[in-house]
Length: 332
Image (cartoon, rainbow, N blue to C red; front, side):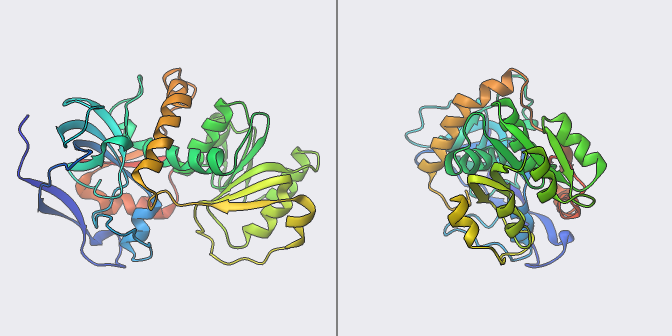
């Protein structure tokens, strides 16, 4: 298989700049090292972390590539030493620490997953970041159990549509918030039992009503700020609140007494700084528990729009508008 000596990437020409500060450039192609594979990219997912990185507001893990892109799909075209789980020509999707906005991208072999049957190679780029983030936070950290309920804040986001589908497919009661009638309808189609339009309804009152005053067992939150104290009121006894972002602000006033009389747990995590081995365990869990449900058609990647790689700026503008439902992809 012919591998070029250079690779086309998308660079940030102005840190903190607008979406049109993203421009194509050419870099020398790096070959995979021990335990890595080189992937010819079919598509790359666009995530909030990318837009934050462009604006200079994202804390980069040590050693992370400066090129954006945390998830890709494509074909394995080169193997590093010691790689035995993949062969040339395999179609995979992968979680990477950066570098996905490119024609070719290096990925840890352990953090690659085969493309589920019935999912196109391009659409598979919508799987790694959101599915691994949701599994790690909702099931591993918040320990959502069979029969428990989940509230997903931002149900129409890439994370949201993933969390709704996974929890619904695994038999949990699912509630979600969204900001328009169209987004609420989309969340309902994906399996949410009750969707709350946060522009016209108070999620605290709705959750109190639909749960008979008991509250929900787990809340997945990417908002923070003023939502936090209201979320504590919406949790059931022994409930868990898990943060993956704080788009509404990193500070909140809370009722500390709620922790004691309801025995609440508040946690959260970011996936990007974790070790390759940690991410590999999540990948194994997904292949075992979730990939069969995708292949059965019970869960699907929700792709809102694809853009050519050179239109990364337009993709960022759409992400920042929050008009999308599901994932945004870049296609080289």
